[in-house]
Structures are given as C-alpha cells and as structure tokens.
Length: 87
Image: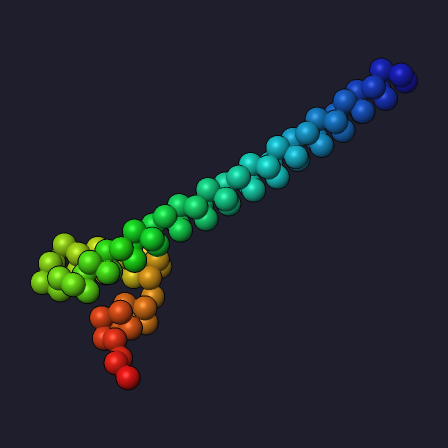
C-alpha cells in the first residue's frame, strides 16, 4: 500500500510540473507573438511613411498592401495617411 501511495504522489507531482510547463510555454509563446506583431507593424508604418513621399514606388505599394492583408495596418490608417486633411 505504501508503494502505491508513493506512486500516486509522484504522478500528481509530474502532472503539476507538466501543467506549469505548459502554462509557461503558452505565456512565452503569446509574448513572442505579440513582439513579432509589434515589430512587423512598426516596419509597416515605416514603409507607409516612405510610400507617402514616393507614391510611384511599386515595391512600397505592394509592401503596404501586404501589411493591410496581413492585418498590421487598417485600410483607414492607410487612407488617412495618404489623404491628409488640412484645416
């Protein structure tokens, strides 16, 4: 009976350790995804600012379009940047 109880405690400890590892892995994965998204968004904003000054550059045009399709920029952001209102 003692061996069975020790085995049960060992199994419970392994389950707790595995659960903690899964939680930490998920938290780190979410943090990395957020950092990658923010880095890509900043790059898209820089490309959009360059595109505002040089609208004939088709490479920048396709980069900005990809940023919209991938969700890093919204259509409204791009429209507002390319069509500013002067009061």
